[in-house]
Length: 342
Ligand SMILES: [Zn+2]
Image (cartoon, rainbow, N blue to C red; front, side):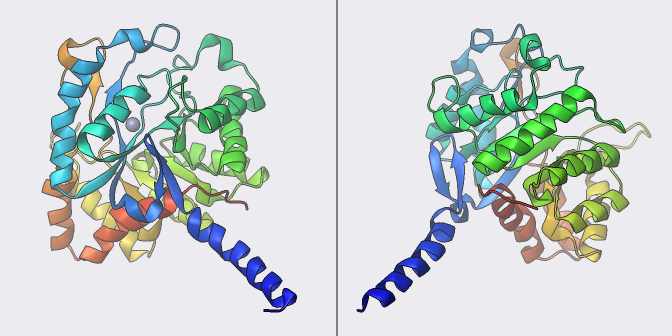
């Protein structure tokens, strides 16, 4: 082959191969191809410790007890075909990469953990020494966790998890959190998952990201069940992910009814009608071993999606393909590690 042709071929491979090779997500056992995620639960919890950032730590729980309690719940989702599980418990709220790694070893599930700080709860879950740090300093901690692993474990986060208060304007600390998330995204390609709630704080965060040159497609509007259909349409139009996270067939509602499966069926039907199912993520936000309670207290299973919601969706005009979009295609596209610029 002439030199020029060889050069052209190498250039071509150089352009094409990285996009093939680097479609990956980061699990607690290292990177895997996004294609191998399979059916995915995108927002659940193994453990939560509500005591606050300045008192929590690995000494607060017995790892063997957490494993004993959590294992059967993970075995149960495997029976429904789930192969990937995103643990959304942030640092200082009971995130334990060693527990997650042991659960991944025991179950064969791909488990993904996160980096970032949780700002709701009046910043009680951010160490006092860090609350007033600049976005750059916060981001440097999160980027270091991605590059070197969490707390010397070598276990790396697969997404950024932050949380802001559900109010119209972001506070200074919460503006710093979303800015730090944007900086971390630009450096690492990790997706930003932000516990948000209503429309206004979702749009406010998207504005911050866009100003930084971060694409809305790098942003998951978490707990969007507290938002409106109009908000979902706007966020989807911009390319963001809308995460409806409270599938629960047994919760008591204020009006005396039980569960929210009807709400999910109605809302998902409207989103399908509007053609924006490709932007929707769903989960239970269930679990969890509650640190401080005997054997973790009452643990909520991750199975209502399969036993209650999917059968109802299939009776209401949803196809197997729609379910596949929600549980396989969307998680893969949302959480693949890739820098997404505006
Ligand atoms: Zn959660």
